[in-house]
Image 1: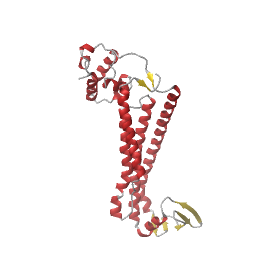
Image 2: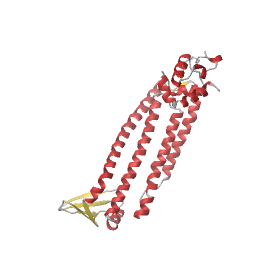
Image 3: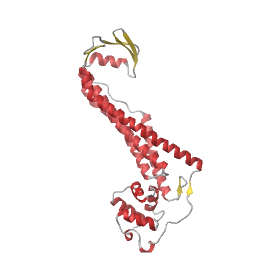
Image 4: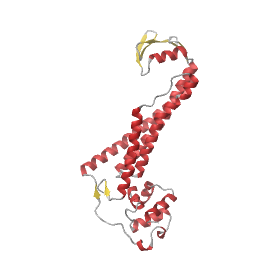
Length: 299
């Protein structure tokens, strides 16, 4: 068995990823990938640290005849000009920070949705719906909804009137107000919040994967198996983001006799295919990168 395969075997036995082992040895995951693909051989110093991290003897991975082999020294080839290096590092760092901020906002939204799910029963118990008239307990004035076009209502409360524009058809809302019981409307609201919560959770995982890829690129590791795996995860999560609302509509449609859920568009399918294509490009790029000694940035 070649040295690279032995290194990989003992790394997996310890349950370590290339990234985690790289952190322990203070080397990049790409360098470990080159060891495992037999593109280069660890130096004596690296070999000692490697054996200590993997809890093995030097003789377990290095045959006697190549024990003193050293990594060939030579100038590193840089694949990008200084200007492009600076541009790529700036872009990857910006993406990492932006996705981190957006992910925090998604968690805040998820928390707000959980509060909504818990408060919806109390909210619905506080008023009665009679057609386009809503009576709120504790208020003398009644709220009236006056249809004002295909997607807007005039909300009237006493002498106060306000125009409200909605993204949903007023025809659908009229159908709910006139034909659905309060319990039925409450169930639809609860299901909508739960589906939105699941979607936000999936979105947070997508953002985490993007953040991880951007961090790797900033550190000079663009074409790696780890990034390819992250891209595939994004593809699977995108499928879930699209499919969950669609499948979640089947049960309420059957029970509540509603037209609930979303349709899957061709654009969604194309986006997912592009992400999977990028993952395979990244995977094959990592194989080529392991056989060369070209780096993204000047050290």
